[in-house]
View 1 (tube, helix red, strand yellow):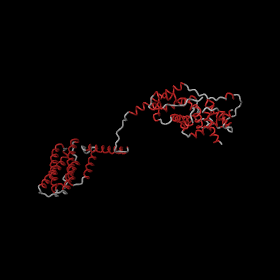
View 2: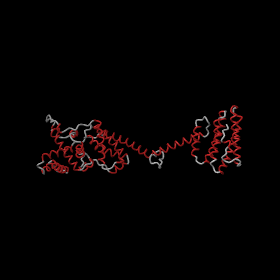
View 3: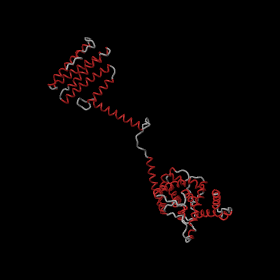
View 4: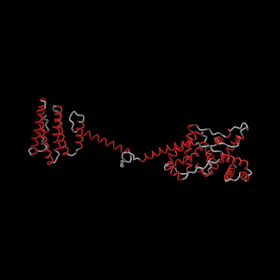
Length: 269
Length: 179
């Protein structure tokens, strides 16, 4: 019933909006005339109510606010056109987490490298001296061939000698621990030489002889600067270097076979 | 008295989308009464209706670049969102049931009631649901066709016809009871 009434009402409303008089429309539906008349009258009355006045001041105020919004909108558009200042993204790394991890690893490597480099000139008593010794040990254990190990022993022995000189310059006394380490490094070289083929062993023996001669000369030059209480130890070391140099000469001249190390295996200090 | 239908030329809209001041000014002036009446007949005080209308146009300026589709529908959707916020902040005005309407005490002001005023309509609309109110405003006060109202409210023409019938039936009962 309600659905039928709705259909009739909509037809009547359309007719009324076309300008057909209300009475003429209602004549077509005598049974629903009363209800239809009331509904159509309400619709017509609402259509005919006077509209609320729009205040000019309100429109002006609205225009002002809209213009302000327009200004800020233009500023935003202008800012959006500015090139953005940002670090170029590394295309290799899809995720920023990878870039962060890479940066972290890079920083760690940089710090480690700087520390190792700075520790190169350190002497016993310096904060970075243990770092230097650790680095040397790591490098030694990472070297696998006997020739490389022998070369490293020679290098470390020479390094100890330079530390000895610098220590004496700075502190005015002989560092016996470093002196012993210098002689030990040279003595330990022969262990690796024994494992080398003869030609290579001869080259290392030659180097070791030169090193012992060099040690002897440098230690002799230090004699006048060393306190008298430590001179005996220095003399013993010079003597040891002399004996080693002589022995090496014999090895090189084939007077003594490789493997007979004489003064190198005796603790002469 | 039926209002003038809101018609914005496509050229004005295009220029407004490019944020041209003159086009936006025309748009605001033409659309202001339509939006204002929407708020006015939705139980909002005149002052609040003016403030809300201004806010609608601030939002229009901010987002007109991406405006698509039927312009009055877009305008009403902004207004509807603002109205929801407004009701939430103020506490929703109560929709009155038809049974609550008191019988008139005398026939003294019957003659005055013969002609409806905007304020009478506002009071009567309080008895309707939000959708019924919107149909009455858009269909009979703004003078849109059923098809236009359907586009604005994003409903079918059939649904709009049903809504307007139910809304007018309810108003008929209100008028009868109020005498």
